[in-house]
Amino acid sequence: MRSKGFDGMVCSIAGVMAAIGDRWGLVILRDLVCGLSRYEDFRQSSGVTNATLSDRLKHLEANGLIERRRYQTNPERFEYLLTGKGWQIAPIMPVLAQIGDRLGLSGAAAPPMIFLNRRTGAEVRWGFIDQETGEQVNPGDLEIAEGPGADDLVRWRLTHTKARHRSRADGPADA
Image 1 (cartoon, helix red, strand yellow):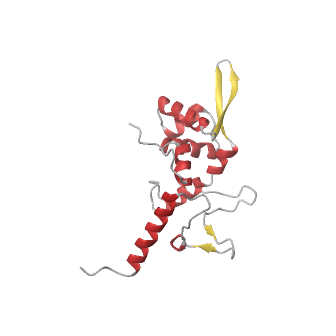
Image 2: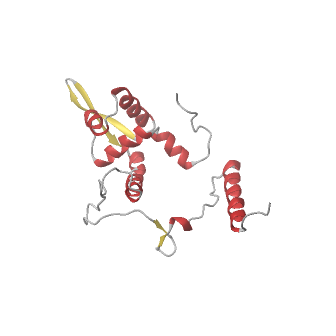
Image 3: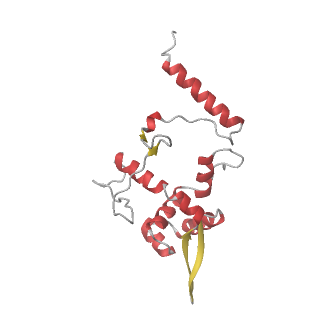
């Protein structure tokens, strides 16, 4: 049973999640970022069933994240490639992988993948960069503010969150 979609929700994160679809969509995108492009490669890499893989590839294509390209005519076979829109999602792969490594979630004793700058060979790590100072920002120091596209629910969410943070800073209420 599929859960309710994100239609009508003004939220960039929900929009990306809707475009990806589910965990299998994310795993397929991981494989595409790693350089895999063929149906059987996705099957071998993930162990996903044929029905699920076919459904998720169609979903990713319908959302403009991948394109299907024929590479053989007899029998007809296709490969799947990230579109420009799909490449916009690619940066979340190292972020998720490095968080998984920090939390020890991969099941391996060391990181199973590292991310390198193709031009320099240097390892790449994710981080938040202050646009004024150029310095890295600790995730705990991030504040989320209303953007120009905010709707009433986004404003409520941010106002509600700020009220909770203020009450926590004031300490526990007397009973």
